[in-house]
Length: 382
Image (tube, rainbow, N blue to C red):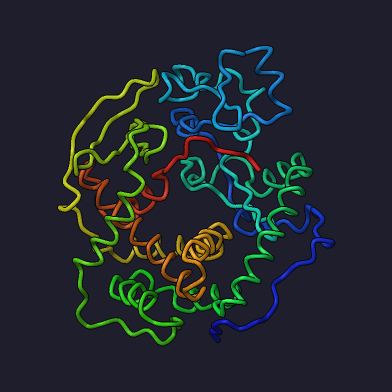
């Protein structure tokens, strides 16, 4: 049963905020294994923050490899745009035993809201082989070593979330997170249908409070509008001129492929181990459209949507959007709309990769898109 602006309380007393390792939600990681493919090195295109307790080692042993980024220290990147300076020509870490906390933590991410939830970064190719070490065990060990930092983050985030929920209730846009997720789960198969997604997106903009159970897709969908929305979402991450801040695709030959929007076209380049960039081709984004998915591809996409729906990071992203909209839209509208945009973004990128690499748009192509990474310049561990 979906409820809009119902004033049940999710507020948590700060007096009760204590980091209990057993209370960390690791449900996403149960039964999953992770391994580091020797040929990959994709995570080393990320610039990791150096924590205060790690700075002395790098200042003493590798002072020239330590740079300041905003208010934080981080490791230098080759030529300021390539991989980490400590990644050798065989794509192995030359300081592996002393690598920063962020590097040790990847591909596990702890999302801290008013609770802590471990998530698996699907940009990591090693998360797809179901081989190696237990992701669940690794997450628990990482949390144990970072308990003080996680506790501090949890207390701070809980205060922010409490304030956010209060503002939502005052504005009359509050909804229970469990009910939002339950509604998506009940309608999960529909979210692989472009007609249904289009209707959800339209309703989230037009209706005061969206109920997924009441949505009936239009018989005739305006595909042009949906394609435009998908293209806009996907191209947004390619607008930067900084190679450290654009999508990276690691292809079947383990080459690093970058995508930037330049003069209204998508420019495809490769990045080598030395930090040199080579332009390979271009494509007109207006000639790329959302794909038709077969049953196997829909199954992979459905599993991903289910994972996304349970992630606190997805919910947190919707909350950030709601805050930026000054609490004028109902929480359900923003969450369902955000989820829909994430889905069509993934599907459009599948078509884009197919344009350059002829990968098709089947199940394997969808999996590839889940490892199609969007980096930020500085990755901070929790």
